[in-house]
Length: 65
Image (cartoon, rainbow, N blue to C red; front, side):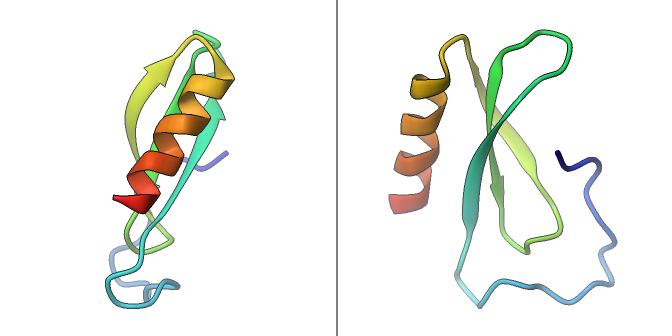
């Protein structure tokens, strides 16, 4: 699991105009969170779901948008 937003001085590990998405289970609430990253070093949580399948579907939709 990733923490924080990373060092802004780090070079992006993703190509220009590339992004990546994923899901992670919150350790306290146990909800599945979707996240998005534009550099490969930062992540931003976008949504939270009770069902893992729902979170996975949303992550795929964000990636293909």
